[in-house]
Length: 72
Length: 320
Image (cartoon, rainbow over all chains, first blue to last red; front, side, top):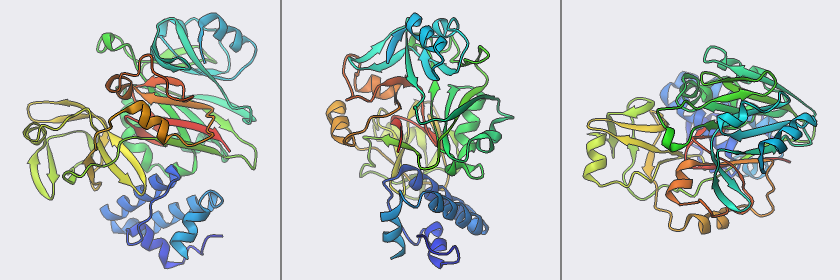
């Protein structure tokens, strides 16, 4: 179960203040891409949270251990 | 499996959905059917790396796929790739090397809305290295028979609920211990770079440091190691086989000693991929002709697609 999109750790993840290495390739690419987008333009943060949240929502079962590590 | 044209034709006529790789002359005479293909004469077969202009490598679309549709994409249509892809499934995408759609995909696709929600796997088609600059890489829509150098071809494959497409990569290259490198602008070439925060003439830097350009730049994308391979080091600029992105930190890769041994060690246990492809640079630099890579067989390609364009990487698809 992933936390609510309002959980501040989603923003911390896309801002890069939470760093995590994913073994699921797509997760690493998705998060990294959105971290870059926010670095280049901070106003992209809400869209990046939407993107990353949607990804985690779709792949919750694959990302179970990552979710525990990031949000525990 | 690496097979002759007649066997491939029989598979197509039997109604099999296929991903096909082979020389243009062979692809052009295969019967119409439920398949897509790209040109390349380099393959990894059960017996090892092989070069052939007569054989084709066919991968059967996984049996879990309940339906599939084939579409072609010019640069104008490419932004529709994500919306055309199924809600649950994957897209096999083949793009001709050096085409405008290759450049557009490499540069723009990761920024498409919802891109990472729609698994995309595939490869960049090429030609025999003796024919570089003389023949154009091509792709083919097997349904219509349309063969061309200026569009990509995709098969959008639907999976039932409970099944997902896993796209994996095997990249033996890790970031080395050398300088941290960034680029002021994104693109397939660079004149300058920020090396440890200082602006340098990048071609001069490569020469002065005697960088082995068989080793790619590597970015650590939250655990996904993404390579950018060197194409040429010119007088005052450096070109790459994939774009570098500004705002991303790269390092030259650490050397890999024995590729085949390293590959076998890196291979996750029990993987039986529905499709895999490996980079022509790995084939050449690690001298893979005649050497086998443990069941990861398929075309040897001018670029790999695991969501985005990759270099010097093995990409595989499996359904879980």
